[in-house]
View 1 (cartoon, one colour):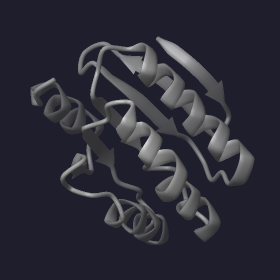
View 2 (cartoon, helix red, strand yellow):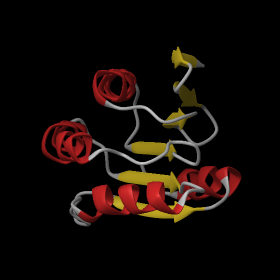
View 3 (cartoon, one colour):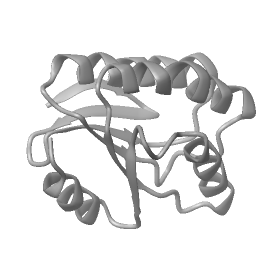
View 4 (cartoon, helix red, strand yellow):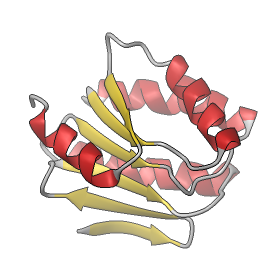
Length: 132
């Protein structure tokens, strides 16, 4: 089920792994990136899940100001909403990979179990195997 669809991002509900699936399709920043993350969080709050699938293979680098907003604003609200398990399909670009690594380094491992993958299907399979 598609919940949000823009040229840079599609937010899906993935029935197989019972997760919100953020499929980033290109570089995005600022208000557009935030609007997409808010759409994902809105869907997450309506579903009986603790799982998140971040497919960031095509995302591109994340600006420092957006990283700060994600870590200081968005992640605390996502964790408060019940996010506990996250699979990340890592970017192809080395610069984008560093951005994602920087963001996730600020997330407390106690709050979220995160695993990185190169393959979407492996990420989906792993998520499905995690406890609810």
